[in-house]
Image 1 (cartoon, rainbow, N blue to C red):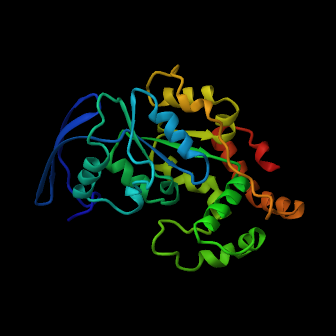
Image 2 (cartoon, rainbow, N blue to C red; image 1 turned 45 degrees about the horizontal axis):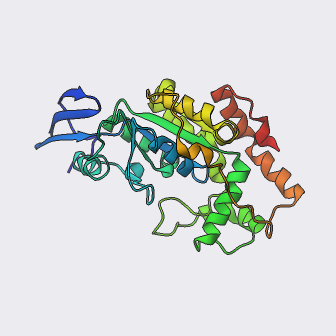
Image 3 (cartoon, one colour; image 1 turned 180 degrees about the vertical axis):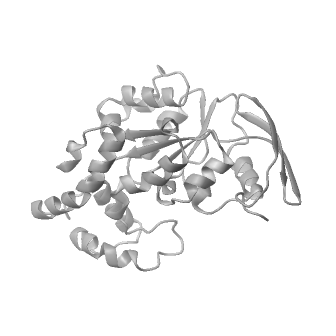
Amino acid sequence: MPTLAESKRVTLHWRHSTQRTHITQLTGVLVSSSLSEPTFFIAGAQRCGTTWLYHLLDEHPDIFMAKPVRPEPKFFTSEPTSTSINEYRKKYFANTGKATAIGEKSTTYIEVPQAAHWMRDAFPGLKLIFLLRHPLERAISNYWFSRENGFETEPLARAFELESERLGQTKPENVSTHPNAYVHRGHYAKFLEPYYAAFSAASIHVVLLDDLVRNTQAAISNTYQFLSVRADFRPPSMNKAFNESVRADDVLTPAETARWLTVFHESNTRLGERLGRDLAMWEQ
């Protein structure tokens, strides 16, 4: 089966809400379907509060989110074909009802640069949401997640020190991204570059966890507006504060903290320039 990029496509389509009926002529293959398709993705990042964001969106009457929230679809972590795209749509978007915004959450996408073009080619009108967090706090959260799931045995500081060496090794077969990429994963600016290259800036909405925690209604209203749904809706999960247990039995020293904050400085600066935001709160 040819990949999407290899396929020669002639598409006839008409829309009713987000329902598309289309006939696609591929190399020797005729594909016909009447299925809903996603209009947006929560595409990152891991350990940044995306499950909370998922529920804030799913509770909106005009938004449909693919179920279940876990395991994530992770469909665009490999190159799709026309057949696999239709199977993906059948599996996750078969019963979207009257929703006008249809989405899924796969936080791995931000780490797959090729996915930007695969998504754009599959769904040209797609919008992307990225929820980002203080990178060192994210790295520590990622460490504890990996430790609790059996992917880490080293103390926190040692795990950070070993990261570069570990990233040169083959990741476990049963995970989509390397479970020990704690610091690496927090260099958001470089991960976003392929997406800004493939999509217009107007199609990308970056949310900072700082904003979502500090003023949940304002942050989620902006996100609703981005998705072209009613912005004044108050989701029930808005009253559930973002809580993440802090482990006091294994922490970085002040000197270690300062060192790793410095590692993120250049990336934070580039991201701040991209967003037009002062990210000084991530420097401490």
